[in-house]
Length: 492
Ligand code: NAD
Image 1: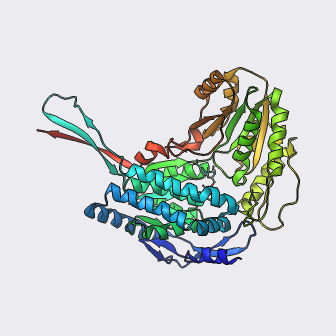
Image 2: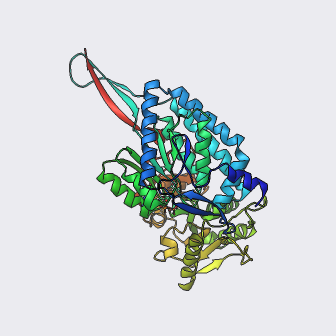
Image 3: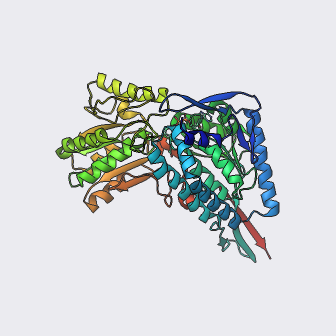
């Protein structure tokens, strides 16, 4: 371990939550091991949170909201605190990048260029919303002298649960809108990648975020996560993770009449028409499905390509994947790191092997991978079809399923894209405005991009339909999701 690594890890107190502005030991005394996915080596331990720790954190969050109400933690102050936290992320960027690399297997260059600046940008974006939230006045329907208006109030203490694929960005996406709206947060990061969220909570204390407004409780989903969902003083759950877990959480919240947003898995189609810019499409699709080792919810994972260009496009995408540098995550030239865990790597390989056993062909370089760590090669599967697990299910790895089509009929093409239980994103590459608009209207997905496969844009609502979840994050909708509307009528 390098000196940099030791220094970064030393900023997070091992085996502690961050509750009420302080490092806090778990009530049970139990710890969970943390490993570096690039080597499998043990790099530390986190607290195994239990219901008692969640109780403490929810109480701290409730107290913080009370204090904020009395002393009026004003919207400009919330904005300033989020801006200060964004600056703190940048000022501590190298240390956070190293932490993210060790904990989540991010190539250090990607952590430096993507995760750290994006996390700061997310908080800056939401900082602006703190001062822009308003109610409305209404002209009332009933006759008489009366005024009507709405107040937009914070929904209350919110529980937020995130996965391991973009740990710091995921934390920023959650806490930014909640704090902007005036809600205190209990964040439960994924047990595989909790360190950057803990460091974020510690940084927040020096940035003017009142103690208790941002609490991080670590631990397993079934224990710490479930306790947060069940807690009666949590007004809303915002969950990002797998569809299976999201369904359970949404059902639990429904029974408790708790507000809930679920951002779940995807199996997003990318349609490539014969009039598309093939180089741009190949590059965009390869980055979408291969970067972050395919562990991106909105990855373009089902390629539907017109048969006339299928071979050429598939070949180009496979070549881009084969040329991407796989290696030690601390090496600056590395573009692709490992999957998060041995379990996840084996899951990915299981889908590939299952498809091969059913007659699929794998286009991949077949190069030697690092001996330690959970590495997987970028792979394009051809000869696949709906009905195969690799096509129907979310692999969450660098595996693209390529399927050619012959038709020019937009209804038929859209039907192929919509042939999934998910609906997170859909992508179309075409040179024709008419084709683009025609497909936008027919595709069932929360996000549609034309001639692009990039990630979420902060200004636009992000979320899914069908089994990709419900509710929206980002944009105005993402912040308003943390507010409750109170309708007021005043007779005079
Ligand atoms: P997961 O559902 O296993 O875990 C996600 C989080 O939920 C973790 O913090 C986990 O500890 C917690 N959790 C697990 N069981 C729980 C329970 N019973 N009660 C409460 N919390 C519980 O998901 P994962 O495998 O860690 O993450 C990958 C998944 O996340 C993929 O399906 C991916 O598509 C999805 N994802 C979606 C988005 C989006 O915006 N739609 C973004 C990123 C990832």
